[in-house]
Image 1 (tube, one colour):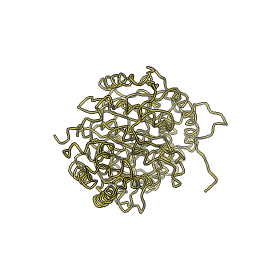
Image 2 (tube, each protein chain N blue to C red; image 1 turned 135 degrees about the vertical axis):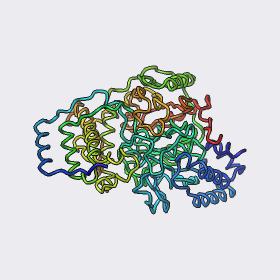
Image 3 (tube, rainbow over the protein chains, first blue to last red; image 1 turned 180 degrees about the horizontal axis):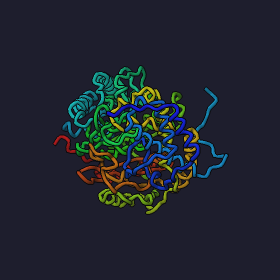
Image 4 (tube, one colour; image 1 turned 135 degrees about the horizontal axis):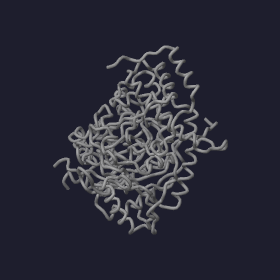
Length: 112
Length: 469
């Protein structure tokens, strides 16, 4: 078992700052991510080597700060790859044309 | 009738025997309890056998039936529930070690409704830990061990309703309740060779069910026939004040539905791309049968929309929120599957705007899919591109080069529409293959009618696994 993960506040802020300078660097994966089933039920898809982007690294550092005591370096690296997959999915959704009138599929009810 | 034949009868067949008093509910319950004890462990299908409760309910059913107080087709029928449904005083483990001693002091609405119908709870059935919400990637993803399909014990029973699929297929219960967030009823139904119905979102109350994803979770029947799915759905559907997502619609079903007119069926474009050869062959044979009842449109394109991404983002965000205490307490480490021990941490970083974007795109998905579905009684495709995955192999490495195709399961779940999986033959390693029928919201009757017609013409649903040979 490798050592659990620790970082300093300075390291974390440095990574976040670096990310802020290069936002939206995520490649848009047409098709590949879209063919995946939900994470709720595993479905085979070719394992692609994923290099976490700067944004994934930054969010991964957030995980390190908050939960690093529960994770090994190896696990944290996998968390960052998962974050990268999420970010790619989010990027694909961000490219979907929506207008201000498009409400989310949630209904708030005032009645208790 | 020999026990091993009795155990595999459909609900409707058992109901005839029970109502006419040719079979005692107590006798039938003892038969299933014995099979659960003897065969359940081989399949990794059972968490808790509710021995005392079952016999108590069976005796009550027997008394009532003897007095002529017959409640309906489920009266005296033994069943099991996926172990994410609360049952008063009986452990409800969610398939996960951190919850293995959890006991609720109330029954889930579905359990209550089945009790009211006179059904007999004989077992809490195994499941993938936390219904797979943390991203498992092998069959070994439950504190009870991997679920095994009774058709070949070296292969997985599917997830996350693993035990529900295996127990029905092996004749350990007459029917089971499963849950689906995205594929968790249809996949084990396909891998175990049974009939599984994912109802329209909101048709069945989820009160008392473990929440993985509030806007995607559904509960549904897993049975030996499509007709049985109709019988069970009728008992469990309907508005429940305790579940605000439940809708004021009741599904009614008594006599077996058959198509009353020539139906319209569309084959999803690309459905046979990159599937196993036997999956293709069995699907094509099934289409020939369906042609007797339906006009087939050979190529219907699904709208090109980001179904997988929408479902993925929603499951990640809602799943992380639902299990935030487990994640922040470092207790994911207690889970069985190594991928599950870290999956929740990535979910904790999904941005609120990305989650809302997914829910906004989802509206478009519902509208676009309904526009296509409104032209057909059902869209069809193989339920899965492959037979069950071998145990001990990562899913993505099980069948290299096979899989993919149209994302029917995430599309249907994102839109909240119903789907029914029925067995349609066998493929590699003696494992079952299956056909999926998907329809508009609240079109369960049409799907069942078509599936009933198919099962009247075929006997795949009557085949029995070689478990006791």
